[in-house]
Image: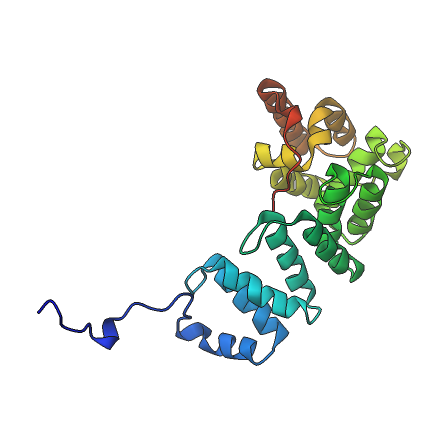
Length: 238
C-alpha cells in the first residue's frame, strides 16, 4: 500500500554515519582522544569507511588540533587553504601552518614557505620563504631541498651560492620532480617563479641530478615553454 511505513531496517543511513569498523574510532573521538579525532576527521574527509562529510571532517580536525596534534593542525590548515568544509581563509591557514612549523613539522614549514614565496595570506617575502625551505630541507623534506637548490642557484631570498645548495641524490630529485610536476598547472601555481626561470632551474639541477632527473626537467621545461605556463595564478595545490 502507498501509505505503508518503510521498515526501519531499510532506512537510509544518517549523514556521515560510520560503518561498524569506525564505531570504536568515533566513540574514542567523542571521548576526547586527539588521535582518534584526527583519524576520524581524515576518514570523513576521504569518505573512507564513512559517508564523506567535509564539514564534519573539519569539526573533528579542529577538535584534535585544539589538543596540539601536529598532523591535525596541518590538516586543518589545508582545509582553510582549500575551503574544504570551512570558508576559505588564507590567513587562518598561514597561522595554523605557522603553529605546526613552530612545533617542528617539516611539511608545514614547506607549505608556509610557499605562502611567503607567493604572498598568499602573508606579505610576499622571498627571504622568509628560503629560510623556511632551509629548515624543512634540513629535516629531510625532498621538495624543500629541491626549492632551496633553486633559491641558491638563482639568488632568490639568499645570496647565490652553488656550494650551499643542498645535494639532491637522483632518487630524491626524481621523487621531488614527480611530486612537483605531476600536475603542470599545480606546479606553476605553487612555483610560479620556477616556471619563469625554467632554463635556470634545468641548469641548476643538471649539476646535481643524474640523467633521469635531468631528462625529466628538460621535458618539463619544454612543456612549460610550449604552454606559456609562466603566469599562472599564485594559488596553492595540496
